[in-house]
Image (cartoon, rainbow, N blue to C red):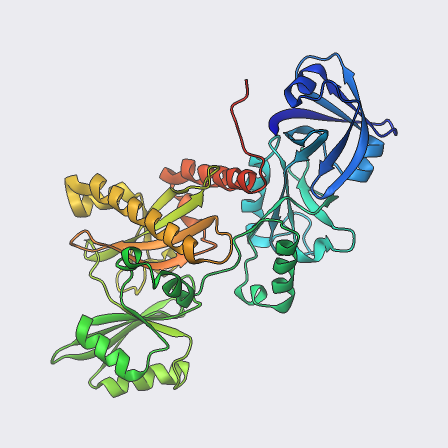
Length: 458
């Protein structure tokens, strides 16, 4: 098997013939061949091969072949010699999201800009496109895909099913639907790599790490669907706890519950954008408030040990670690954002008054000269956690966002793990390079999963 990069040109000729430069023929070890099978995605056809004298690595594809194989455009892509006389163009990389037919300029809503970044970064590297579930034609095994044209606008082209899929469906509700479950299973049956499988619930993460003794020491004590006795016991043991929805995000629905001897019980939360602090003389009064807001069964919630985090100006800080699998299938830390909580806020989310900071800037203000050492240790923990989750997860994971905290004794704690992390940390001026690196890592891992592995060109 050999892999190289070539320049694909589309010609108006109708015959099923491809013209290949001598350099490319030699690279692919096809100099003695007169016919081959050309494949794109899951579609392949026999074609006649004709050598041409042209410097460089060039492949000319006639319109007759293009129509059958559905080559979407000219440009530089990989060419894989799978076996003797079988070559594959690509890879076809599909970004799965939901799309609106109402908008021609922003078909993927708020995710359009992010998806465009991936498509632009993949230009002249692979055939990268976006699509929605409804764009798949299973009977023909094709996709009506969204590509970017040379002016940055959207153009629709029909291509074979992709070689690999990066899942960015944005809705937890949609992902649990029968239709999406069937879609994912069909891709798996066709042996098309599909990552990331779905959003994590908090219960998923705790279960995945339960048997990982080393990694589990970074997880605060957490109890799913707690009863009132459990909440009371944890308050007495830890003084404060967090009470949060198992499928929540963006800090919505989180309570910080505190017990102070002789002062009573306190509940802090955000309501309609405002921070609320309530005091209760008796524990039963606190529980009546929670049950009144969320039902007597308290289902779908987790109570988690509170941790005294390092602080800046009396406000706790935590960190978002954006993790990726790279082109060698290894977990790496690509970006880190420090988040300082707003005054009186339950969480560090920017929408709740939090402030985004560069990690070293934040750590220097809390740990001084030990900042670099503390940060390096946190990176090691993040990789250890990612590897532990992946070991126990039944499906492909290529990206994880960790919300980590560091307490005053420099111990690292994992509060959240997100299979489809947001990208708000990359808006910080000091993290723009990391934002670009994140996009590159997505593409590199797609190349790995599709078996179009990079190598240095001679």
